[in-house]
Image 1 (cartoon, rainbow over the protein chains, first blue to last red):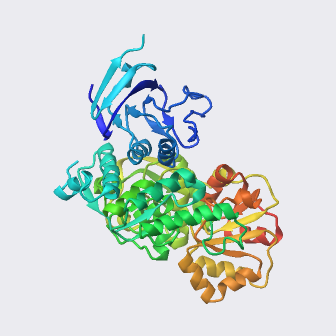
Image 2: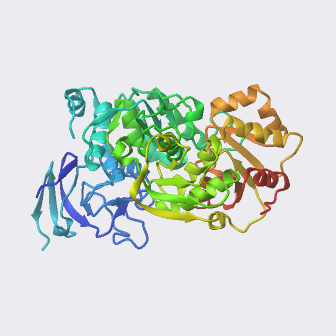
Amino acid sequence: MKGRIIKAGIAKAEALVSPEPVGFFGYVDPDTGIVIEKGHPLYGISIAGKILIFPTGKGSTVGSYTLYRLKKNNKAPAGIIVAKSEPIIAVGAIISSIPMLDQIDISQFKTGDIVQICHDEVEIFCERA
Amino acid sequence: MHLSKEEKEILEGAQGIAKQKAMEILVALGNIYEAENLIPVTSVQVSGVSYKNLGDAGLEFLQDWAESGGRIQVPTTLNPAGMDLDQWRELGFPENFAQKQLQVISCFRNFTIPPLCSCTPYLAGNLPLFGQHLAWAESSAVSFANSVLGARSNREGGPSALASAIIGKTANYGLHLERNRKAQYLINVKCPLLNEADYGALGYLTGKRVGAGIPYFRGISVHPGLDYLKALGAAMAASGAVALYHIENVTPEAKMYNMLLDTHETIEIHNLAEGYESLNSSITDIDMVSLGCPHASWEEICQIASFLEGKKVKTRLWITTASTIASLARRCGLEKKIQDAGAFLVSDTCMIVAPIQDLGIRSLATNSAKAACYAPSHCGVHVRYGNLTQCLNAAIEGRFHS
């Protein structure tokens, strides 16, 4: 599959799929990478080192900086795939050098799939058993 | 998006990491919003200045970008910081907060941005002209620049505004394009507007209804003047995400062109009671009165100083403004009148981005609909909203009267 590059790069990791939008400021703990937004489908789960896949971003513009802090703490996602980009996550991925693509049909991914991002190409490398 | 040869080279890193990162941000936003190209901006206003909002994440990001060689290309000013950069000790700001805030300001100095921290840059030395393209971030300032001055800016975030300052350009989409500046909403104002609080209440109600849309006001027959327009725009940018409004026979584009789309929705405003109700809690005892959101103009400071002459306040009273205007007030003896009444003329910051909970504040009176909108969630305080006279009386008596 091909997407549109928001931040170019290469990453291969386990997929973590959220059916709902993801926000970072106040919603993800910058020190642990764990989602702390009550009621969110990913509540209590760490996004660290995952290919994080979700429809679109939400929340305060400070979220770009939260993503940067996660990266500095080695708790950032390895890569980000979204159906539709918005500026907060896009800017966050760029300033944090996290490979990111948009304009991809995210219904093809399941949590636990091994997913590879190579610039604008995405491959589901080996599907979850 | 079409990029020039030089822009492509910057994107590939030919002019260093700092510019490459800035160009990546502008190009990504341009792609998301389907911009055709980048256009030069005449000035930038950067948000994300208060340490309260930035936290260590933002501070680290700014330090790293400045160290990698980030320097501005066009005149740039800053949004309010989390404290008065000179009088923070006298105002009771905690030392550890102050040190972090000073580090943020020092980062911006490394970008060669002067520490003019104001949400009214247009009153303080960063004045856009009609038709100029800007990359401004402070929502009320964006509204004023677009609507009252006829300049053109989208609502930028902190990093994207800084990226524009480093490149001197922004992506050409949204309100930079003539075709996107017409109003989708006609607001028929059927009630009198007597003071800044009425304009704020109108703005609050309108922002709730139109969200990120563009309203066109009809029925405001007398020119409201700078201070009331500042209040109106700030309120709409807080309760909604209004970056541009028009007032028939008042704002420049509405005077020159037909700025109302043929297919518009009409909203009638018969009274402001619902706005006042939403912005007011039921408390009467007041700890603090905040005036100057957006930052007080020279005229507002003159009015306040004249009211306070010979009186004493019971509550904490802050009048927030830009440092350039505060220094003029000092020179003219207005600051002394304010201080003699026990109040403070505070520069560089505002209620919302200052850590006022740490100062022990629990209840607030303000004449700013924007502050009344944000203070309960951002600062954990109960709010009373009213006009300047009501707020000044609350400061003198320690109680707010409806």
